[in-house]
Image (cartoon, rainbow, N blue to C red; front, side, top):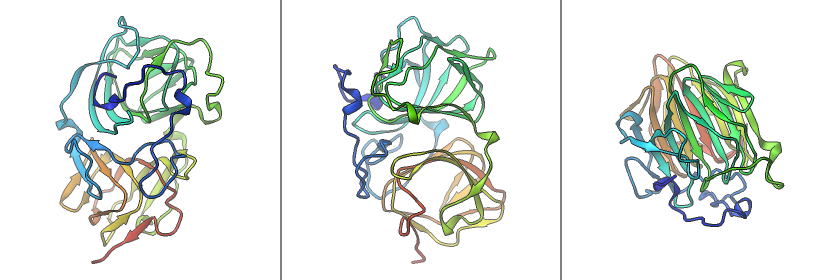
Length: 297
């Protein structure tokens, strides 16, 4: 994509599976390949260590003519609001694809995660509807794309590296097919317990777990939740509010609000009377002691 989200020039993409990931700045080795460390945001172009960034995505300027990097020019363009990015090319965006959008099969040169906020899309033989999720590892060939239902589809679009479309009839021979999640309907998943004592009054649905034990999930915070204290978050996090509200410090998260939280940030007190639903990405295993610390001072 011709924008800040893909600032790295990558003329030769043949070796894309061997491009090293950014090592997580909490001391990780990059195995998770999420590249969430050290990102700029829509409200802070320059990365600010240990400082949370909360904002309403509806206020982010919209790039009205946007195409997947490398996609044929005859494919209808979409629009995009760029939320976070890293110099390696990784980014998180809110993307809208129009009703007439159709794109040919092929693969991408970086891992791609998509979560449907509204509408529906078909990718090959699989359909994704509201709150559907897919993880497409680099080099895994997927079928034709087509927006369904005569209405635009809105997607949380997460590129985990410098992503480019490549026309291909087969998977790359070294693609991580074992990690491919074609179409996951999150509404069919059971709710489970969270991993931290700070969120006992919440439930969690795993969508994907990465090699570091982090990954992607839905978090439902129950009504009358009170976190009581700020917390030190020893990991990087993307958080998108899907429904309800949660007050985090002086900022009220409501639908379409977004948070980027870098490693070792002290996040303010969380509380809600009515409850809320979040889409979460984290690059560390939160079940391990010392990753989330209540901080009453």
